[in-house]
Image (cartoon, rainbow, N blue to C red):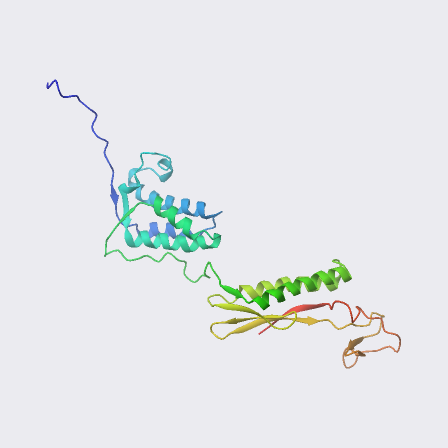
Length: 269
């Protein structure tokens, strides 16, 4: 035996996995991208786990077995650059919902396996089919911002004048919440701009020449005396409809004409 030779342990076997993800494995990655996540960190972790779980399948282990192992070399694993890029791009788009696209993209790129070029592997579609985008763009003009504030102030005035338990306030508040939500959530896929449309009304214009909006419809004062169906219009009392009964008496208005006007917001095409 050579006295200058010192026996050592053989170097550890390095497992190298270099292959495309299968269609079924990509389906799992797609599902992890679009499932509900608490935040961008959880999103990145779920996607990285799905990718490595696929590549580690033949070794009988999972990513959880290696994620905290300082000796785990991610560069020993690789997927085609087309799949790698599609995963990073789609996750980055998804992370926009938290305003964390850049940080999520960088974290993901650092944690994913390596990539290699294989022109035979197509770019996978990892976005969901027939679904609304994660981002819906709505630009708000300066005047529209003032109108939104005025509508909110009108609700405050109604609450002060009639009380938050009154039907006059609750009908207005409920219609404002309902119609404003509808105004800013439809239709998807278009560039939209919010404009004022009168003191308490708004409309949206779209880049395909569409228009839709909400308008405040004030409630005319009506007589609160039982049996009298008179309403005030243009300073005069008149029947609320053609066959309505109007009693000859001093009418008691449901709300003063010079106070904050009750009403409701209605949709208009």
